[in-house]
Length: 563
Length: 45
Image 1 (cartoon, rainbow over the protein chains, first blue to last red):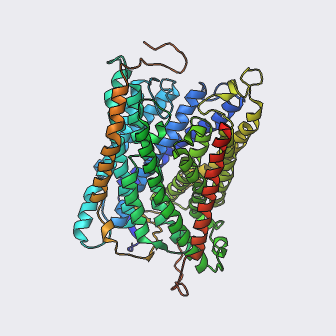
Image 2 (image 1 turned 180 degrees about the vertical axis):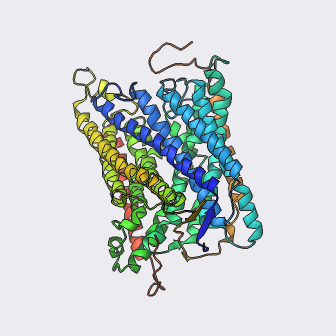
Image 3 (image 1 turned 120 degrees about the horizontal axis):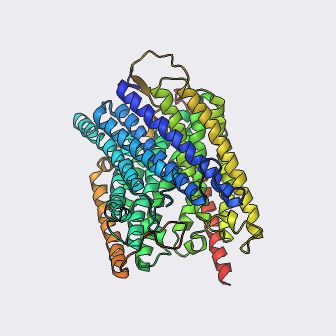
């Protein structure tokens, strides 16, 4: 074992393998649900042929399993691997297992309730749609389990700081800690929403719920959730990608600055999802809109820094001229299959990023709000850079923890290309269809895409068909990936090691600036709290002043309240 | 997975290509943003 490796105990090896394998099964169910969504919307099916149930049940398990469950598990697994590796310290395995079991039980509980049709509330679980109490309890266990996982890292981090006075914390650790600082602050609001509003209401302990307050608390959590998804991908972009490409990270300080900026700007932005909601003053919506432009800055810094890092790698590999380096990167090298997942995600994110800026532009949001443009946009973020980086990371981690050679590397390499082509086709269909007025969260197959319906919209059909073609290609890409992933899981290991000896391709910095002002989380957390208080206090006051009474619970199947 | 080749010849590296790429990306952002902006204006006409 050298300084580039770290030995994990058998217990942590088994836990992390479990944290990667079980969510991959749930991810597959969710992705199957995504394929069915395109079929429903095109009118090809009216009921799910395997799982049963309608469009909204499918939309719920597609969103919850892919966007909340899979992402949370991967973020925890990556932290459980990268933090001990980078700090050369061991996890407390009892805490790690407790957190893992809570997450697993919670996720399976929520998934079962959704698949039984008792929680058809979509991934935003907006009231007045009501789910079975076990859905809310399951989500709570998932979130609290993830909190516990991150608390397990704090003593290791503090101990390392004490032993390494004056040294910079490894960038990967800064990134993972940032991810979970944002996650912790953001999930406080959704925990309050679930524990004090939705759960008692779902159990029948209270009759009514304040819908606007619940939506506002949800989006306090819902937008930073995007950064909880993105930041583990950023950790891999900054820490792994330059090295895999054969180069160096152009600026270590840029990475640290980006993570601190995310702490500051990630949370006081949620109301830009509520531009069209009543009960919140326009001035506060505008303020959240301005902060949203602030949170675009770290992504722009990232775009330049990573491009510079890749230019360094490409020129080292013989690239000439202004753009010659782009042709020299290892896009199709089998042994560097991980690079494809990262670079394609970045390419997709160029288009996801500008879509986000359009959504956040206050008046422009009116053109796209609640249209198919919105899923077209967020598939270019969470189902683009996030999913691809997490898939690549999962395959890398499972190979490392189970000490197995990656199987079907050719499939693993081609999979993200097939998926990306499908994603662009699907998102183009959804976005342009959305601009023509095609709604989101609507079973167009039963209405606008049904020639027998008076709602039939001939000029949307081409875009709906594009989304089916794209969805099928994305599904094929994922199947290719899963062949490699499960082929690796079920292959024989040549190792006789009890634990796991792990290594990561950590990039060296080209510019290693001292950046002392970026070495402590505290000032940035304090600024974030001040901005949150300033931006959310008037919003919550507006909501409380403008709303009265509440709503009885409903299901999507009936206009009559459930009680 | 990484590449440990030497950094010979890279001492004076300046990311001119990355800068050009970044500027082109910003220009594309502006074009797409205004395309949507004029789409809204056309709806009000």
